[in-house]
Length: 182
Image (cartoon, rainbow, N blue to C red; front, side):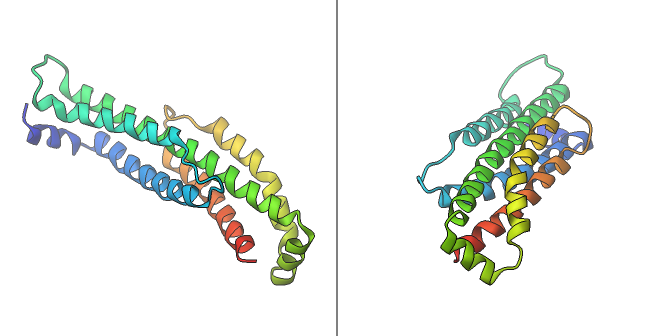
């Protein structure tokens, strides 16, 4: 099998759908993982999402090594199976990163606003302290809900699960930035 034949199979709708969503999930994960690494007070990197990226990459490379293998596989099914597995790893990478990201942001905001001087500064500058407090207190329950509903094998639009979590992260990051700027 030649690489051109593999690329032709990858362009089929069912497979390209997974590749498109996997690309979006990967870029979200990378974006927020880089931010989390920078804002982490300990300066640490959370390795689990990186392990999931590595595992996804391994499945993608398996597809392209078909060109050098001599096998009696159902090639199209083998490619689809590995693309789905790669997507699963990217999906897990996003959720692992998102959990870490929300923990870091939530912890920082909660700690900073627990000081009366910071809280007063926040309340002088912004008029949403009570809604921020409520949101920060709700985030653990939201995260638990996202985790409970997470299922890469369901046939719902999977990207919507990621974008829902992303919206929570964006709001949390906005709050983090405001508190940090005080």
